[in-house]
Amino acid sequence: MPADRHQWRILAVMSLYALFVCSDLPYAWKDDPLNRYGAIAFGIWITSAIAVGLHSRKTPYRPSRSGQLWWIISAFVLLTIGSMGDLNVLKHFGLALCVASFLPLFRQRTVIFAAAASWTPFFGWAGHSLFGANVDLLRIPVALITAACWHGGSATFAPQTGKLARVPAMIRKHIMAIVLISSLALCGLWEWSPLKDASDRIAAIPEHGATFSSRSIPLTELEVESLQGATAIKRLYAQQKQLVWFLCVDGSKNRNAVHDPSYCLLAGGWSIETKDEIAIPGGVAQRISFRRADETTQMLYWFYDGESCYHSLPHYWFDTTLRRITLGQSGDEPVLFILRPHQSAGARPPDWNLFVQTLFPEWDVCVENRKH
Image 1 (cartoon, rainbow, N blue to C red):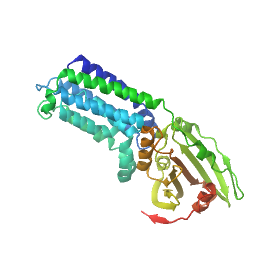
Image 2: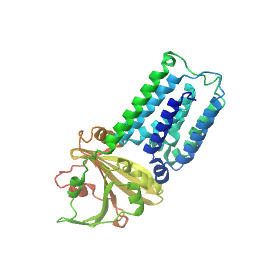
Image 3: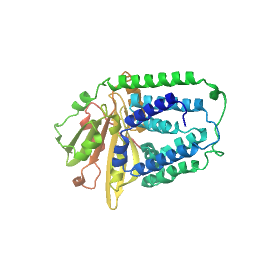
Image 4: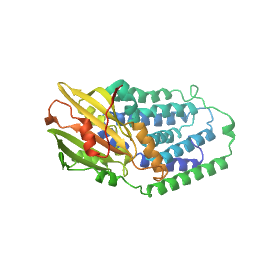
C-alpha cells in the first residue's frame, strides 16, 4: 500500500473524484436490461479488490511506488477525458484504474483492472450481440476472476522492477499534484461551458401537413427519469391510415441518455429477427424487425447532425465526444430519431419512405435495402 501520506491524499482525492464522475452507474444498473447484474458484479469486484489489498500488506516484496504513479496518472487521464467528452466508458475504466492504483503489485492491478469490465454498461453493449440477454449472467464469473489474486500476493503476483522504481519521491509528489490540479481545472472548465443544442432542428420537424397529422404524446415518468435532462419530443403521426410513433432525442444536455434504441424492446421480451440498412440522402438509417411469440414489430432509427445521417452508435459516441472536447467547434449535436408502427395499425409494415419524406420534405428519399 502507498507508504507516504502525500500519495495517500492524492489517492483519496482521486477516489472521491472518480465516484463523483461515475455517479451514473446506479441508473445504468437499474434501467438498462443488459446491466441488471452490474451492481452485484461491482460488489464482488470491489470486495475482492479490498481483500487483495489487505492480503498484500503481508507480502515480503517491496512494491514499486513509481509503478503506482503511472497507474494514478492513467486513471486521471481517463477520468478527465471521460468527463470532458461525457464518455462513460472512459469514466468507468478510470474508476477501475483508481481502485487498482491502491494495490502495490503490478500483476494484481492488472487483474483487478481487467475484471472491472464485468460491472460496466460497456460489457453488456459489447457482448449482447454474441450472447444476447445471457451476457448479463456472464458478469458474475468475470467479476470472480479478482478472487484469483487473494492467495497470490507474494509469489504469483510478485512486483515488476525497473527504471520506474528509481523515480525520486519528491518528483512523484510534484507530478501527482500537477496532474490532480490540471484534471480538476479542465473538468470544471468543460462542465461550465454550455453547448448549443439542436432545438432549431427539432422545431423544424412538421406537426401537420396536407396529407398527415400528428398529436403530441406526454413522456412517461420512466422516460423522463431515463432522459435525466435530455430534450425529447414524442408524437403519434397519422398518414394514409397508418399510425407511427415518433421519438426525437437531443442529448446535448445529457449525451448518456441516448442509448441503443433496441434495448427498450429487448427489455420487454422482444427478440431481434432481422436488421436492414435503409439508405437515405446523406447517409443510412437502421431498420430492425422484432418478434415476441406471435407478435411482430419494426423500428427505424438514425442520427442526424444537420448534414449527414447514420445509425452507428460508435460513430455517435465519437462525434459527440469530439464535440464536447472541442466545446462544440467540431460540429452540431447529432439527434436521435426513432420511428415505430402503432400496434393498432395492423400487421402490414408502414411505408418508411413516405414517413421519412413527410418529416423531412426537403429530402428526396430513395430507399435501397442492403441485408446484413
